[in-house]
Image 1 (tube, rainbow, N blue to C red):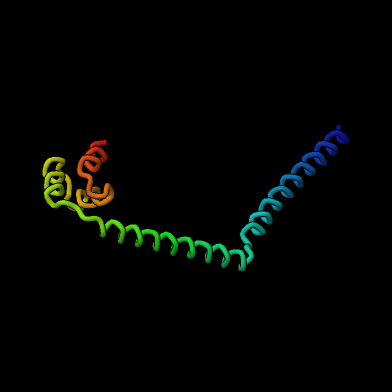
Image 2: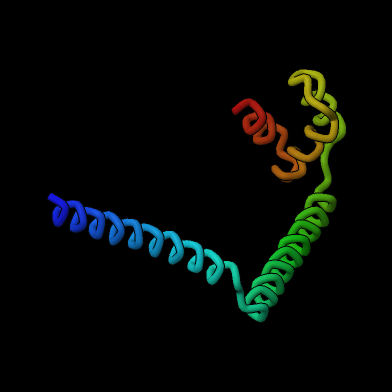
Length: 110
């Protein structure tokens, strides 16, 4: 029986060592994953900044286009009163629909 116990102990020790080895591998993998190349990080940050700047420029251009659209103040008042909306929302929606009150109202009702 003693030989069987030793064999069982060796198997348990072997399994324990395997588990410890796997745990160590996971730990070192995490450390390696966290060590990023600084040039890759800088490149990604530059791409994000460039993308954000492009988005801001597009938003500015869109706002300029909308500001150039002439709207009827009577339409703004009607939409504001009848749909119980803020005046800024009514104006913006009218500008987005190039002053077309019917299209703006349809959009707001959907």
